[in-house]
Image 1: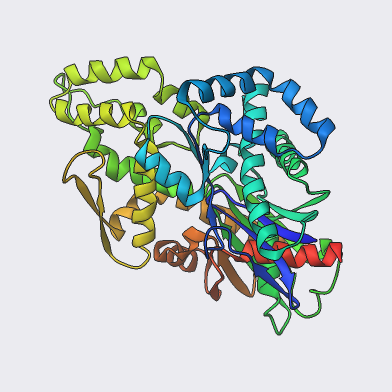
Image 2 (image 1 turned 90 degrees about the horizontal axis):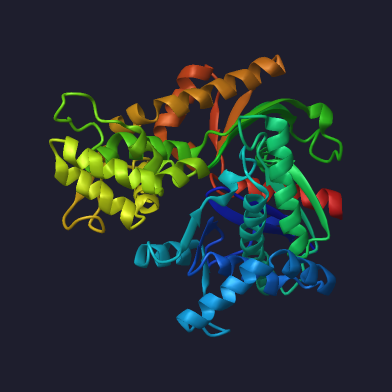
Length: 454
């Protein structure tokens, strides 16, 4: 059986074809979207989980041999912590967030692993570890769908951004796609194809078009923003070769996560001393604070968690006129609350799609601590990444050489009135239509899977 698989930066979704329509399958209770997050009591349990899941005996033995030292450590942790063979030690989605909030400094937590794929400077051990993380996430989704449908999934179309990273895009894309392919094969997919995510979103939109149109599809995902200018409609949708219909595409590593990070840095981090005066009259160094909230960057997180950063925080406490704020920052770092803080920033962004002001409780940091954020503050905070998104849209139209009839926007962050207003102001007098902000890519991937695997 075939499926469309949106292995997203923020959420995962999977669709199958039923009654001649793409249907997204519930992955977590009745919810069809599984947050892209994983929490393990020990980092080594991730590799252990992959070793247990590989069905092919030859492949399993080869994998175990390649991860022998890690698997030995996992067994040692089990003995020392008295974990039994059937104890749950790895959690996914909302459960992963719940466990991380309860035990932030005791286990290993990762959110949006897709945002790390294709990163420059990753050593072989990093790549292999990301293969393991992606494998377990894919396995969780695939098994949930197989249980719901009662069928074995062997063929899939997986969504991909135009570019995973901005530096050395060709090498970056190859590395990321190789990781996704390794994971997909490990979990049992025999046939795997990749499709640009904005094109997938466009295919979902195309099912409802009654006339032919040139469409600018804008997919603002968690990790990337991707645009495609596509001719679509009744004359095109039955074609298998759509190469000539895709007039242009652009994409860059700037997405919803970057909006969350900008808001966290500019509005949340002053609560932790960012911008506070020093006794010398010099400005407070800011990079420490940005490292804390840049949770989609391996290097930033490595530096933030280093002993050198701890020493710098201790020195800042002596130099600042507001030591209580630096103590709060030290507490944030010591207890690994920075992912929680960025999640709060994301919640504020989501709330501000519906309201002009929102209050976010931060009592896990300090009793009665909270922050009120307005839509205007959000708009000011996200100006740099929003400008990049607008440039990508303009570049796609310029590359296509013709003005689109309509702009179709999808992706979670595309719900923001700030973003929609910017599109209308910057791109011009073109109708802007909202899509299924979370499900259009998965539905389009499923449509394409039905075409190529039937």
